[in-house]
Amino acid sequence: MNLPNLYLIGMMGTGKSTVGKLLSTKLGMDFIDSDNAIEDDTGKTISEIFSTEGEDKFRQLEKDFVNSGHPSKNCIISCGGGLPIIDGVMDQLKEKGMVVCLWAEPETIIERVGENTARPLLHVENPLLEMKSILATRKMIYLEADSCIPTDGLSPDEVADRLIELRDLSNI
Image 1 (cartoon, one colour):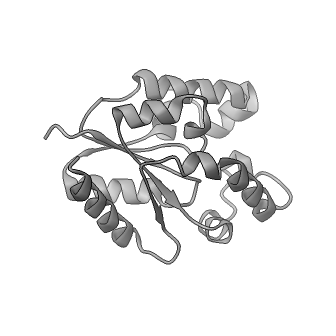
Image 2: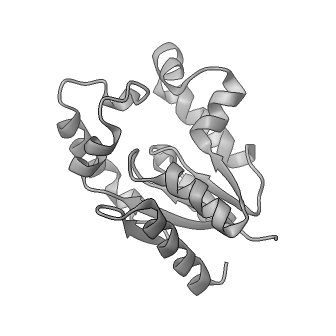
């Protein structure tokens, strides 16, 4: 197959990686998680990059991933939650393929990610309040995606099936 890439964006805990892996199997496409690719390239975890080099360095690594860190066709790509907020990146993703935002309410996200210590943005006193704040700042950018699927109350299979319907409707 030689299909355009499908980029899954949204906050952590919305199902991007879980659904992306499932979808790649169903469609026979390759799966790439941008955070995992960055960890593999740097030999450091995302938390280590944040703590030793800072968020700006991490965002540059994300931008590098978009520019040259993955194949241009036949991939389902789970993007880190902050990747599309980088200036100009959303437009780049749309040029490379279809961009779909997976959305979940803050309470659902916190329920899904829990006390995951690999999530540097949640190393705060009140994770729910922090999640609400982050979502408020990112919502308008996320909504620039080609489509948005609310994942609250849906199984990964149901979300994958909705993505397949979107893909079929858009002929990608």
